[in-house]
Amino acid sequence: MQEIIEAIKRSAIRIKEAIEFDDTGYSENTNSTGDTQLKLDIKSDLIIEEEFAKLPCIKEIVSEEKEDKTPLHVNGIYGIGYDPLDGSSLIDVNLSVGSIFGIYEGGYSGAHLKAAVYVVYGPRVELVIAMDDVKLYRLNKKGEFVFIKDIVLKEKGKLNAPGATQMGWEPRHKAMIDAIFMDGYRLRYSGGMVPDLHQILLKGGGLFSYPSTSDVPNGKLRMIFEVFPFAFVYEKAGGSAIDGKRRILDLSPSHPHDTAPCFFGSNAEIERVKKCYE
Ligand code: P6P
Image (cartoon, rainbow, N blue to C red):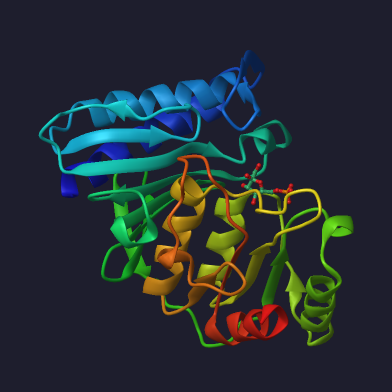
C-alpha cells in the first residue's frame, strides 16, 4: 500500500507542473461519459498510469478517462479506480481541481475499498490519505509531502455545498437545502468536487450534495472514481455518506462508469437528508 501512496505523490508533483505550465486546451477526444477531454485530462491520466505500471502489487487500473479497465500485473492484488483530474474545466478560470483514488481489493463495490486518497491542486498542493483515519499532508519547497494533521469532522458543521442544476431538484430536496440555509449555513460551492469536499472536511463539517435530479436521475458523480473514495474519507473522518436512503459504501455498481446520487457530511446534516428522503 505504501508504494501506491508514493506513486500517487510522484504523480501529483508531475500533474501540478502540467497544470501550471501546459496547454489547457481541449483535445478532439471525449471520455466514456461524453465529456470532451482536455489535453490535461489525457496527460494526467498517462502520468498516473505510468507511475502505477511500475508497481507489481497493482493488478489493474480503472480510469474515469478510459472506457475499460487497464490490466497491469497478473499477480497484483489491488485494483485502483481513479479520476485523474476532477473538475479540470475549472483550470481555465484558475480554480482548484483534484485527483481522486480508490484503492480496491477483490472488486469495485464500496465494500472492496481498502483506502482512499485525494490530491488538491490549489494555492498549495495537499494530499489526504484515508485508511484507519484521515491524514492531511502538504507539499513543501523540497517536493516532500509533510504531515499537517489528522482530519476529524464535528457532529454538526456550518457549510452547505448544494450541487446539480437547481431547476432539476425535487421539491423536497429544494425545501431541505433552503431550510439548511435558513439555519445560517454558508454557501460554499465551486463546482469542483475535490476542493468543495476538502473545504467541508477542513472547516469541521457541513453538507455536500449531488442529488438525483430531473436531468440526471442517477446523479452525475461516478461511484468507483469519485463517490466511493469520498464516502470512505468522510466515514473515516467521523461523518457519513448516503445516496439519500442507503449508505454509499453498501452500494455496488453494475458498470465501471455508473453514477449515484450522493450526500457527504457531518452526522447531523446527514440525518436531515435521511428525514428528507425517507
Ligand atoms: P455541476 C466536475 O465536472 C464534477 O464532476 C465535480 O467535480 C463537481 O462536483 C460536479 O461535476 C459539478 O457539477 O452540475 O454542479 O456543475
